[in-house]
Length: 92
Image (cartoon, rainbow, N blue to C red; front, side, top):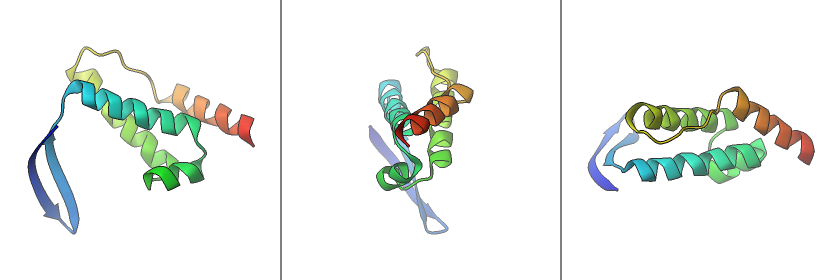
């Protein structure tokens, strides 16, 4: 990973980085694992994001990888939501 540029907009730092497809794939898979294996409160503790925000990030990474690489992609849509709901049902 290589930092290309850092800029601040409205007190938010934006990073322009050079990242390999393998690195993005690892990030996506790690976030997907957290989403499907932890309850919403724990997701917030781990990531500082709500579970729906985390799912949106995973979907964005997956879309980038699907569009620009030949790596096989998973589906965080209905399948991801169902896996998360199933997990929550078995742990309550």
